Image (cartoon, rainbow, N blue to C red; front, side, top):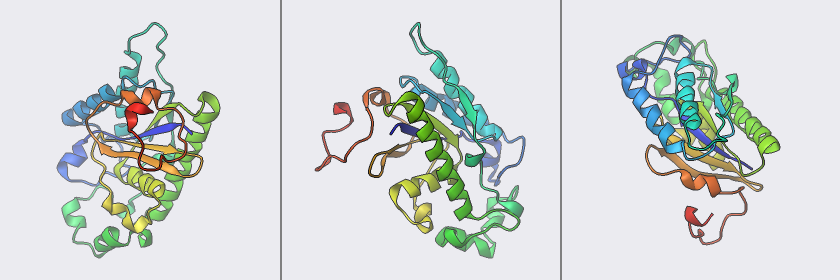
Length: 237
C-alpha cells in the first residue's frame, strides 16, 4: 500500500489565543503558522506527492496550498503539481457548544475530565462523539489510500492535511490503540506523521515530526512484512 503523510495545519490565530476553533469560518494561519507550514512543505519537497487531500476548513486549505506550491517548485522539466482534493471526512470534530470557547474555561467543565480519560464515551453537547469522528476520519484516509494505490501503485506517497484530534485518532487506529488512549499521542502544528497501510497491518513510521529529511520516502517502496529484529533502517529501503 502507499505511504500517507498526515500533516496538521500550521498554527492559527485561534490556537495562539487558546480558543477551540472547531469548524468556525475565518480561522486562518497566523504568521507563525505560515512559517511552520512552509518548513513542513520544504521537508516534503524532495518527495513527489501524487495527491494532497485536505480538510475543507480554511487553515488546512492554506497549509495544503503551501505544500502544493513547494511541490510545483521542485527541479525538473517533468514536475507536475499534485492535485488537491477537499475531503469532508477529515474535517475538524464537531465540538458543538464547545466551539469558539476558551480552553481555560472548557477545562472547568465536568466533561473535560472525560475527554482526557475516556474519550470513547464523549459526545460534545450539540456536536458529534469522538468515536464518530474517528470512524469517519479513518474511513476517509483508508479510502483515499486505496484510491491512490489503484491509480499510482503501492509505492506512491500522498499527503492528508487535517486537524490535531483527527490525526491523533487516525494514528491511534493505525497503532491498534483504543480510542481511550489517543490523548497519549501528541500532534503539533504543521507536524508530519507517516503511516503505511501494509498487507497485514498498518505500519506507523513516524509521529509528530517537525524536522528531518524525508527524501528517503522517494525510494521506500511499498509496505511489506515487518523486518524481524528491526531491519537496517530507512536508508536501506
